[in-house]
Image 1 (cartoon, rainbow, N blue to C red):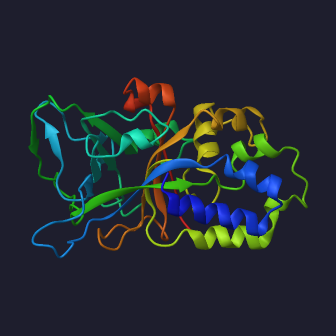
Image 2 (cartoon, rainbow, N blue to C red; image 1 turned 90 degrees about the horizontal axis):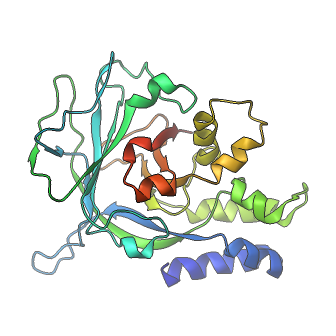
Length: 288
């Protein structure tokens, strides 16, 4: 994790929390990759190291059909990431060392946003897909299907940063339970300063997700369990089994707006990620 983000979060914790609580909370930080628009450095033609892009046209294997949600239509291409270019060794999840990850989502272009994908509605899961394309697979650029407009292409660079769990994440409850109403983590100043810590566009790979509303891990866990009541204790247990694969935020440069300034989230179990079973990734989205 970069020393700058680590130092910042460490300082925030010790300013607003008792020392023992601060150190325990600090132990929950995880390394993640922040994806940002790559810019020209102004030195000849040099640019930030590229790790992928938002939008544009995807490059797919010749035998790979464009992802479709049956009965609704083709998905839109959101982003692609070059695993070999990502600093994967800095993460605590087993991302592939090479190959490409391509993300697709049924974004409402064909139905004016009427159909919604939700973790608790299995029939909607095909609305979001992530494809893994091995380096050995020959690829060609694909034009978008009829009725779909591609998003503007935005090149991406990556930096390693420390990420903290959402304060209502099950991993926090596991570490600090029981948590009475006057627990130091509920300090309003601490909550507010953490929120202010997240400025700008939040595209992420790995680490803790930054939810727009509530913890995305619990949303996915409930769907994976077949939608039990929200007070079912299995949900918190199952949520601990899921990690963030990718988060794509609303982005003006890419002309991407997810609801009211929301974000798209793909999560996966580490064992499925290690086996490259990206077909088992689950999706959710949130907006303000």
